[in-house]
Amino acid sequence: MNRLLTPELEALIGTEAVYSSAEPLGQASIRYFATAIGADNPLYTDQDAAREAGYADVIAPPTLVCETNQYVDRPRNEDGYIGHQWDIEVPGTRLIRGGNEYEFHQPVYPSDCITAHWLLAEMSESISRKGAAMLFVISEVRYTNQNDELLAVNRETNIYQELVSDG
Image 1 (cartoon, rainbow, N blue to C red):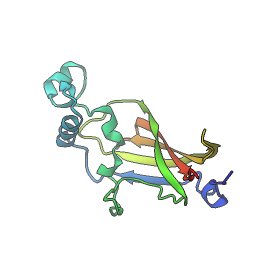
Image 2 (cartoon, helix red, strand yellow; image 1 turned 90 degrees about the vertical axis):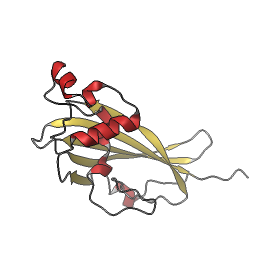
Image 3 (cartoon, rainbow, N blue to C red; image 1 turned 135 degrees about the vertical axis):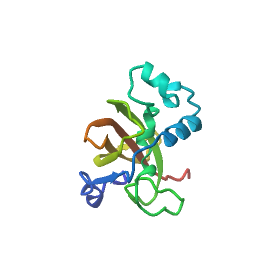
Image 4 (tube, helix red, strand yellow; image 1 turned 180 degrees about the vertical axis):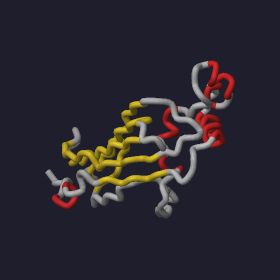
């Protein structure tokens, strides 16, 4: 098996990155995101409906808090992306999104200033059914508000799969 988890990559486990928003999330951001994902829940756009449901204001669709490109302050990469990336290079592989596991702890309001605490939590190796080496990279992101209250946790898996020839 081709070893993908090198000592250099293994040394990255435990690396942290923190990004904080420069301003509150805002009602417009919530409305735009809800429109973009086709979510017509009045809790996202109607203050009266949100208050009748027991909220202090409109609330954000749950995954909006996980869109860190809204508050990451870094230059765009070659693909135009500005959100968080670990910029891990694994030669001879292709990157596959392995999925996300979300935990939502409390509503996100327009007045919330979000901080994302990224942790490169784990790396492990495996072999695919076709015999290709795979490197699993797991990040854990904790999202807090301006009062350091936990809003959500996102456990994200990326897979680097070895490119193998058919012949």
